[in-house]
Amino acid sequence: MRYFVKFTILSGLIMLALLSCAKKEKQISQTDNSSSISSANHLVTFIELGSVRCIPCRMMQPIMAEIEKEYAGIVKVVFYDVWTEDGRPYAEYYRIRVIPTQVFLDKDGKEYFRHEGYFPKEELIKVLEMKIKEEGK
Image (tube, rainbow, N blue to C red):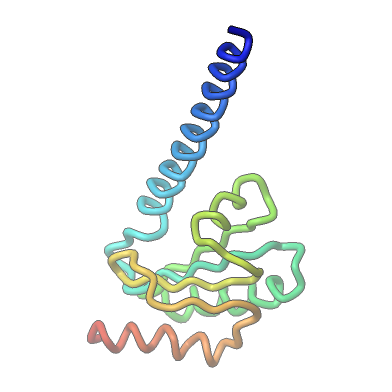
């Protein structure tokens, strides 16, 4: 009887943990889809996953600002600081291994390119232009 009670309690805790993880992933997916992926006005969403405390990530900040300015209305730039409580779930959602990681999504929210590490602006522009030309703009 004692083992049955322990088993029941342990099973309940495991179920709660699984439900909590599933709920968190669902929340991230819904938030991401509404805020950064489903942008009818943008052909590309450029997501930078990094941290403000990471040197290569900080080197990407001016590049992101330039891309946002130069491609206004065409490219949406999103930054997630994955070393914070709010940003950590995005590291899991996008399954990143290192920071910075850049993820490029098409207008339908499907990933079409990924890069790990510092990404020079010239190379980044090639990835953007590849999709923009494909879309006919």
